[in-house]
Image (cartoon, rainbow, N blue to C red):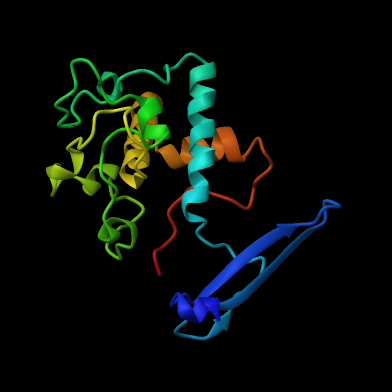
Length: 191
C-alpha cells in the first residue's frame, strides 16, 4: 500500500532482529514497464544513505592529512563560484558541507531525477546553467538545511584531490575494504 501511495515501483529493505539476524526482502517491480519483479538481491539506488560512506571517505582523507575538515572549500576548488556574503569571516568549509550547515540550497528535483545524466556528466553540470545554485543563503555554520548540492561539491573536492572520479575513490578506499563488493558509487542509470 505504501509503494502505491508514494508512487514507487518497488523497494528493498533489511531488518536486524534483537538477536542479530538479518532479514532482507523486496516488493514491487525491478522494471515497471516489463513488470519484472524486484528481488532482495537486485541492485538498487540507496539514495542519501550513501552520504555516510562519502563522509567516511572524507574522514579517511583527513586521517591521511590530505585535507582538514575545516578547510574552506575554495582552498580545493578555487574556481567554484560560490557567492558567500560572509566569506571573509565565515567561508564555506568541508565540515559545513558534510553537516548540512553550508547555507547552500538543496539540489532541485531535476538534478536528482534527471534522465539526461550519464556516467560521464561532470558534477559541475548541477550548477553550470544556474550559478544561482551556489549562492549562500545563510551564514555558514549558523543553521542546518539539508543539501544534496553540498554533497555534489564534496564529490568535486574528492575528484580534485585524487585526480580521479569520486566514485572510484569511494569504491576502492571505503566499499572495497569493508567487503562491500556488490555495492558501488558508479552511476548505472536513472531508469
